[in-house]
Image (cartoon, rainbow, N blue to C red; front, top):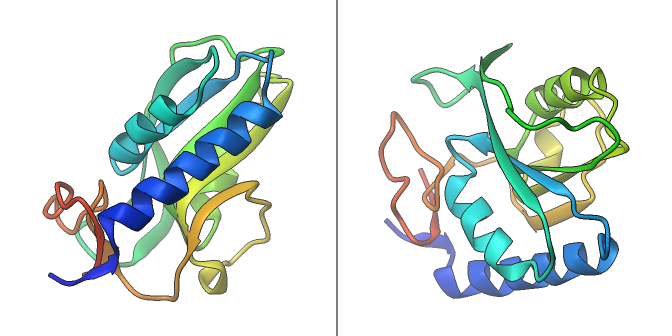
Length: 167
């Protein structure tokens, strides 16, 4: 497979995102919530680039089956364990396209009364949006192509690639 975004470009951008987050959340001890399974590699690399105290948890949601298109229905598979009331939350996603999944997550977590909720995504497909949602930290804007690698999969394959490739 040919790289759409190389490993070197990924690491440089993640380093910059980590610095921006550390600057914005200085002395705030945010909670990073990774959305499984796709965000786990990005989240691990991002946390190492954030030079500050923070907490980590994971959520599992499903909107994709074995196809390349989302079903439009979002299901909660794994809830967080940490108490987020009065805390700053950073939701870490591998890719945002329609916005339906992140909107569901935001509405779900707002019921727990966090102090703030922001999104960090490695990849953003703005042209695929079905709803308007603000994403504060974006690694790369990409066109409407199916991508794999660096945690993103097709039928549970290709997650291990150290770069982003067209699927």
